Structure formats: structure tokens, C-alpha cells
Image (cartoon, one colour):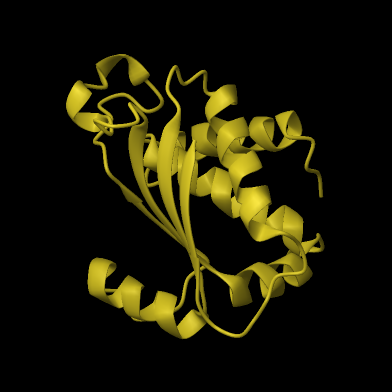
Amino acid sequence: MTLYYDETGDTKLPFESLSIAETVIQGTLRYLESPYDAEVNLLLTMNNEIREINQEHRNIDKATDVLSFPAIDFEVPGDFSDVSTFDLNPETKELILGDIVISKEKVLSQGDEYGHSPLREYAFLIVHSVLHLVGYDHMEEDEKETMERIQKAIMEYLKISR
């Protein structure tokens, strides 16, 4: 797996965010039975920057916890059988999944708010985002239920609990 990682802002997370991200992304893809190694871009940033990105791309003028920008339009969520060679990095043959942007401030505040560790919140946001990158969504009630069920199963699979 290739993880292009960048971090902006002065706030630091109280754990090794790069290695956790690699573990969570790889574990999520293993759980989903992806036959590919993946390439993902991850940006850890601050509320003001994620707010600007959210405004620019979604026309929503507020900070959010995580944004996902899929590189592939999965017809069926999590179905890797329709992946074409155009979706693969020609040099590494890794599946180019897309971009994840996470607010470090939200990781810390939501961990407190939901009564669990920042590490658990960070891992959850990555799992949530990877599911978006492979086509899952939560706009409709049935999609939301499916995504929540899979997120819970992946967190258990990764042995990251509340």
C-alpha cells in the first residue's frame, strides 16, 4: 500500500497517526476482501482548512470531521470486480482510491464528546472514509444502516473498541 501523508497545523494527535492510518486502511481493505493493494492520499489538517475545503467542494461553510474524495465511481459499493486498468497506478498496479481529509481538532473533540479515545475516533473516521472511497454512502436510510453495520464490523475486526 502507498499512503501519501501530509499534515498541517500546530495541533498534534497523541499517537503515531501515519502508522495507525496505514494499519486501518489496510485492515479495512482486507475486511472488504479487496484483491488490490491501494494508493490513498491522507491530509490531517485543522478546522479552518477543512472548512475551506468543505466550502469549495460541497458548498457547505462549516468545519467537518472528515471529507472523502473517491477516485473511482464504484457501481456497486465494495465490488472490486468492475475495477479497470485505468483505476490502477500504471507503475505500482495499486488501486488509486482517492483522498481523505481529517480535522485533527475534530478527532480530539469528538473523542471527548463520544466518550472514547482520540485514537478510536481517528480510526473510525478513516474506516468511514475508506468506505466512501469504495462506493458506500449514507444518504438513504438503507445505505446508512448498511454503512453503520460494516463500520462496526470493521472496527471489531481491527480490535479497536470504544
